[in-house]
View 1: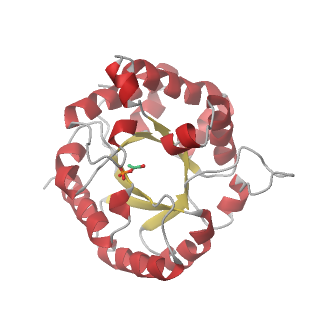
View 2: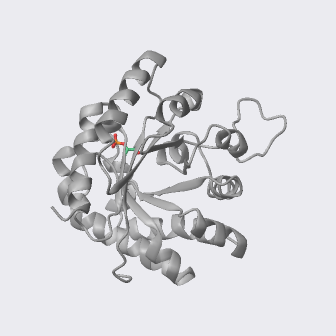
Amino acid sequence: MVGMTKRRKLIVGNWKLHGSIAGNQQLLQQLRLNLQALDAVDFALCLPYVYLFQGQQLLAGSNILWGSQNVSQYDEGAYTSCISAAMIAEFGCSYVIVGHSERRLLRLDSYDIIATKLLRALASGLTPIYCVGETQQERDAGMAEEVIQQQLLNMLNALDDDALERAKSLNIVVAYEPVWAIGSGQHASPQQAQLMHVLIRQLIATRDHALAQQVRILYGGSLTADNAHDMLSMHDIDGGLLGRSSLDAQAFTKVALIANALAHGE
Ligand code: PEP
């Protein structure tokens, strides 16, 4: 374990390819209401690009920040359909998910592309949520730690001294999301996740001790109200990245309440 710093928990929703203008309005208004009194936890929702404007309209002034689920590796130019970090920042976004396994595995985002996206996000003042996670096959082959290490080193090696300072001031976030746990209903055990989170923190400490202390490492993968207490009680699990549970106001609120109660020592 690297130090005993107390980090404020962060609960993030990843809507993926879900939403509609009418449905979002209900969900966002309900969440705004439900979470308004929760003072000990940070919240964010990562929306499809086309709903960032709506998110900004409905969440501004609340205790829920918002962000995107991806960003282009390009700044501008003839790149049809790409959305740049500067464009995302114009919608008041605070966060951007970088390297989600659904991008890595389904859209073939390479290590190089992910590293470039990370830097683009930082340069535009967005806090990256940098995702790492092993597949079932990699875990079965005993390679889980090695894979996480490679993915983490990809992040650390991309950061020159300036970018590292930016990563610190923007409070970069890492999400450990075992691919086998995403959307499967089969979450990692709290102990399994804790071990990985410690490994991630130790790897970051080899580059920068202060960053390792402050970085929030979220767990993602079938995190629900049923397992949130056990998962979020672990010392190095600083919050959660929720897919399915972020699409339902009640489900997200239940996790938020658990995180807030834990933060208050209840
Ligand atoms: C995710 O894909 O980021 C995720 C955590 O999904 P789920 O919560 O649905 O497993």
